[in-house]
Image 1: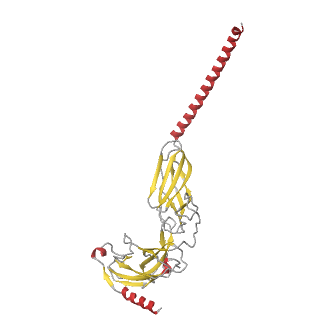
Image 2 (image 1 turned 180 degrees about the vertical axis):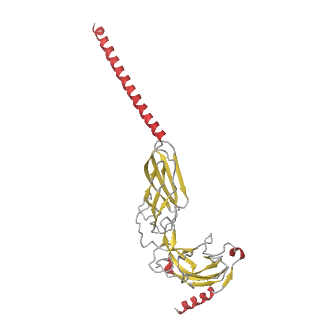
Length: 342
């Protein structure tokens, strides 16, 4: 325990080592703060915006550092704290606020410093320590490290501040301890554990020849999944089709769900149509179909009525023609009857 406190004391000194920002970075914007991986960190993502720690075993301490930047010209007091990832209604996820209870990655991370005083156009490095507790569910976990301006006391009115979060991704060995969506992935045919997102509800909201679909989907797997959506509308009368594709529908955390409104489709083929939604990710594909009747334009309805009327007229003419043929055949038979008898 004493050694651990000594380590934290050592890294706390490192926090106070400030570095000026390059002129180009300082000039990108007039004010603001951010938190990013330290340049050259082997766990930094390719984009350099978050950390990808890979597999982290329970009870094995993991240490790394993050960089805090003050890109403004004024000195800033900055709060730094770990946070859990929390699902957003419209897909994706955010991070818990300061002071909110944390139960996942946000509870596993301990920052070497939680409040900084940074001069303008400067940066510093803050070490952190992460320990996955025994009994943590397997699969992918997401948390974050947040930097935000410290709250200022006094003054009336509404005060706003912007916080900046850096994602921390890691994988815990083993199977998830629980799944709030205990359903098997459709079309896998194996009856095993689910492997991709599932569509829980698809509503179309038709209005005239337009629809604005809304989909609810859940992630019963142990991975963060951001599916690709493809919506296709095909006319049952052969009047054409429409389709729309969304490359990233919105990431969902393991065991979480989301509801997203897809782009509206306009000018659909009138009459009965079939709507098919397919969600695709590296883990698999799931789809759902629905039938909808699209109200046609007046000319189409008039032409359809005329077509039906012509069919009825043609049928009636054919029926009368057949009746006349039967009468002529009966008359011929009656006339030919006496001659054949003699």
